[in-house]
Amino acid sequence: MGGCTLPGGDGSATFVCNPWPVAQDSPPAAAFAQEYARAHHGVLDRLDWDAVAALIGELVAVRRRGGTVYTVGNGGSASTASHFVVDFMKGAGLAGNPPLRTVCLADCVPALTAIANDLSYDEVFAAQLHVMASPGDALLVVTGSGRSPNVLRAIEAARDVPVPVLGMLGMGGGPAAEVCDVSVVVDSEDYGVIEDVHLFLGHLATAYLRATP
Image (cartoon, rainbow, N blue to C red; front, side):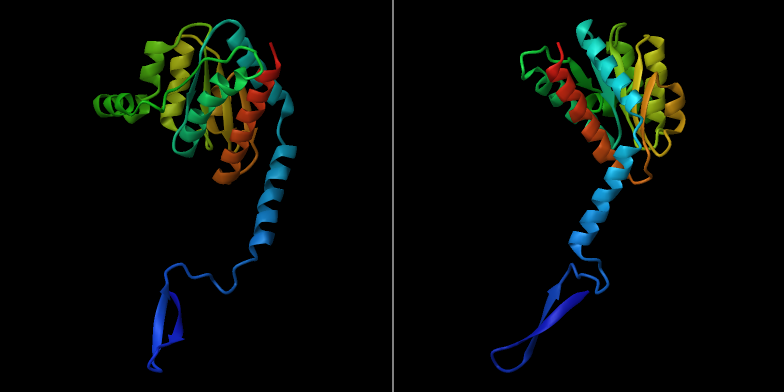
């Protein structure tokens, strides 16, 4: 616990508590930030840009055939999957080109909790896909590890429909990389870096959709 002493009005010392002490050997914030940025530059340089182009091409194809993209993820990846809804449905249409109909299967808490309670948490996305997805749609999975059981079950459900499966992955891709039709794997073991690049890819896809009929 950090703190300092301040002189009181009567000459006594008063202890002031600082609940968030800074370690004496902490690196300077600017240097830390620059190193964090360099990690991103390296990861972006190592991206498979042909895979990125293939993933974006699949999104364009879904829009042209009037389909829906279903997105899934857990934790921070659920937030990214949800963010793609506003990007693809609103941002992609700002220049007069059509938006891309997108639904995040992590967004409906009542559906998630009902399926998790009555069936299994592993089924929270797969059960929704079985009800909603149709040929012509696509599944976009966002996962840092590529190992989440509910994401892998969603991929199996997509195969049942069938719809193509697109993956934004990390950490080598995990089992998901072997069963996605198109995988973009972020070459990092750091969840923060992986999630940052996934969001970058979503914004890149949105910009391309906005510029492409």
